[in-house]
Length: 138
Image 1 (cartoon, rainbow, N blue to C red):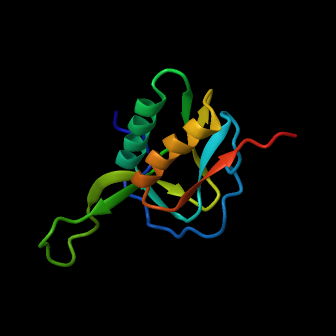
Image 2 (cartoon, helix red, strand yellow):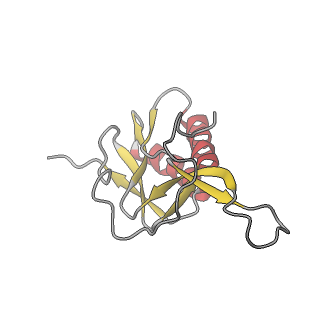
Image 3 (cartoon, rainbow, N blue to C red):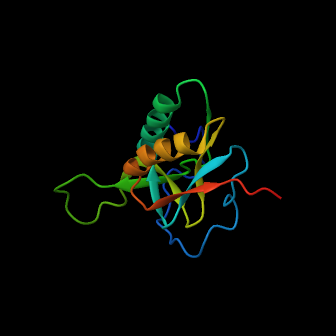
């Protein structure tokens, strides 16, 4: 299941910078527990899918997994051993831009111990530091 947009206005995007903390998507909304980013970074679509598979295998059928990020940004690269010039390379893969505080995955219908174990498996696959957060009760 390749995660990528159906259509984009522009095929190639600029790199940009990740400044500041997440102001949106930084609270647990759908589930009871969440996996929150502690550092800024790009998460590849393949990594998102690998995390989804790892979590689904652990949860099986008793819990529900929510993915709260989507890879909207294309990353380009030129082929190896290519001379300078000749323009920007072709899009190679898609990434989700994650700022510190973004809740990336959520789990519902599981205990805290199960969520800890599940998110520990997910954390190994992530290229950035993450932590477990609970839903805030008002």
